[in-house]
Length: 540
Image (cartoon, rainbow, N blue to C red; front, side):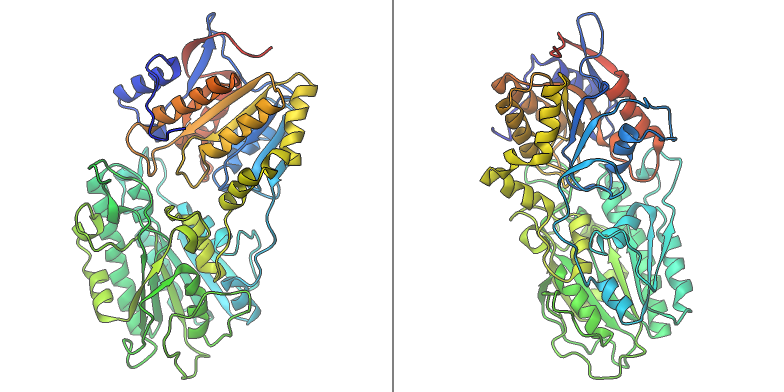
């Protein structure tokens, strides 16, 4: 199907989305739109004993919604206690969830950076605001929920009680920097890892002034940290996980609020040396090279699992037993020479510019195959932090699932068959829930379409689709385009019906904003939202 096709003007749900656009709504925060029959009764709601496949593939933002649908002892808002859904998730979102997983973890990722440092007896401190805590924790540890001996985490709350981070683009960067500075005085931490979230988080909002303020705030805090490292003899390594606002415009001039394919910076300022600019680095590398480089700086041997290469041309032979290292991740800070549409170049960044010009540096590939994703795809925070910590290329879930679709094993997946056969046997509905996009790190329409074809093959009668939309990296009003494409696929198969459309802001929360999740729950279970007559209910 043509990924650039346009919405069918005769489609009531698509027309409702377009009306919402005209009323000032945008995809990510779209209020719920619910299909109803001619009598006004919501169609395709979750009912007792139905089967559900949550086909998203990233996971950390899907946990809260999943909990609300499956946990009988759920307490955060009123729920139906006896839905008793046959619930399947595409990948493992959290090991504690009582669900069946179609593509469980493909083996444990051993000897990540944190684990190696822990085994060596070093203490590691990780500092991030809550928006990025899961990345420097779970993902950097190889998608491992374990906190290793000697690992400590400080989570600084992201701003609360606001409708958009655009109103506070500084976020909690100064508090993150303060926490870094305070812990420089604790010599027990040989490795400190900190993340500035601003550029990535604000970069997903279509507000150029806010983005520039975010970039300049990160640069301001970077300057403070550089001086602290200089005065205390801390070795500073600065990098990023992926790019964003350095490519703010598409070729046609539309605003790009998503991630990019551009490389990211790597700068080494070894203030533990009398010549902090004396090291030599390879000019190019990839994110998997970060961990081996950090281990070399600390005098720790790289484990055999790490296939990444040290970026140091001539590793220092001086005594490294007392060297302390700060890894500073400027989340979303990409490198692009072209100044057109480059908000990092447009912002005032004297501290980064000085660091880049005076100290050894390299550019690292942070997208596509370099971070275990399909060729020519953009990077993301999950893949970026995973590869920074793993020190090797890790094949991401999307690639595994794409291959399963290609070779036909997807259609034989026992977990999918359990949900589909259960719906057929018990004369219940099959619900397909997830992101509608070809480019999101949370999922792809290709997987939804594969599930629809599988349901058609098994002659499932009642298939309902609950679409989550969001414009991160998409062109304006892409949600309506994707919803139309899903409807087109349903028509071509004579199977399925889109019954809920809602912005991902409400559905994919990870900060325990339970009011957002409740809005999604009540739309899908009770049919609360803007009602759109679409004809009759296909449920038989």
